[in-house]
Image (cartoon, rainbow, N blue to C red; front, side):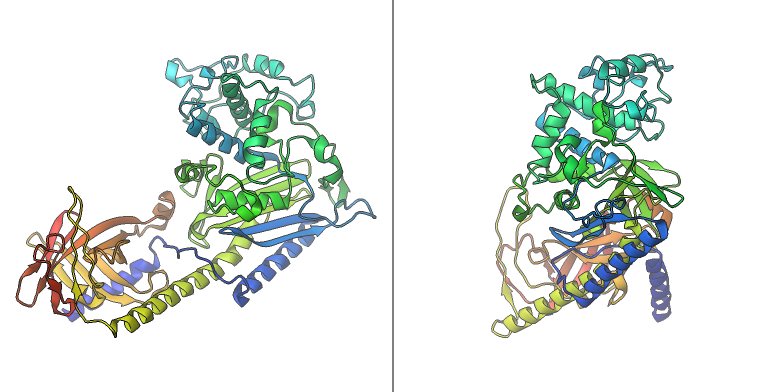
Length: 569
């Protein structure tokens, strides 16, 4: 038996080394911790080093953890080509180009939640009948273009609006002209069958959302821009964010184009009909407010006046992947690109933008509630604008500090519990409350791990093993488990105090590529233990009619129910 357990332990630890990861729970931590201060300093040095190597002259960076901006800095001059230029600040404006698509997606979800549009799977021509495009596909449903397809780049539309970029916002690229040109063009693929990035798709999405508001008799001349300004920018306190360049022309840092060391400022073109795909001007400070909101951590001190702007379920949709790309290492969402970081074994969600000397990237590490916005005000080939390198610095530090905080919390809780038990008896009186078809609540002491450890079997050859708790990395203070050869981890049930006989086990796929396709998430099941007392009487915690005292020290495990199977110890 010892030999069998020894082999099992080797197998378990080998699998844990290659299993899908778990993440520590984000909680408030001391931002003056030396490890964090060093990490932020390392990011500062990283940015300066990258700027020097890439010839970047001006740059801004903002990092948010939970509901706080933990790092923000502006680098360089407002205008590098002006020798008298002041320094760039966090409150200077710049173009965020395709990061604008985040606001367009937010509008789509909000109008869906409000019932302005019925479903993300509605044909957009139900709301914008003036839009027409040809199709080689014969079935009616193959000609539909939905809100979801536009937002996830699966509409089959071409990449760009049929106008030259320099004509955007002019009389040569009006909505009438654009729609006339599109009516003579064809879809490049059947909707939903191909992921094809489309600026045209997002511009059409925003304009269709605007038309849905017109159907509700909204009279503004620019319903998309008006709605986003009054329903996103203002509620989130993004008071220096706008579509209108004329409003902030004197506060805008110009973008620089670097042509073999020769710098120039390209002309600022308008966006016009294409604003939903890339027309927003913002600041580093305002983008920090957006990061906090999208992390679900609204903060009144930031003048965010709408704490329930998006429902939690809607935020989850916003951050969910829609279609896998390549070998499962990336996927499009609505609007974020999901990329798997093998360095940190997690998904990074991001949206970048690149236009006229401005290169920006907004990125999220959701399990850690970290958000980053970096923007280079000089053309640069780095599509992630150094955010991935910054994340590589942040994650190991946050992981270590959060795990230590969790350990400290357990120690403090145990100490408090131990102190309190010195003034009470070792037994606890149970209390039952009868409700219709619901589990009856019973308050007893927590079941110690030592009672659960052992081997459970049944007549069908199933084996369920629970071994000692481990100090291994992500699995600290959790019991190692094996069921039919699969490695598992036993976790506490959320209502452990009320139902200590219920535990949660996490299944992990041992193939790292497969971990990517499930977004590094765990696959959980609940298991149910049955206990006997020293007299051999089964203790039914849910039907304790005698209101008996339960002495935890006199209990032992009789059986466990796991995934429909009953196994005995």
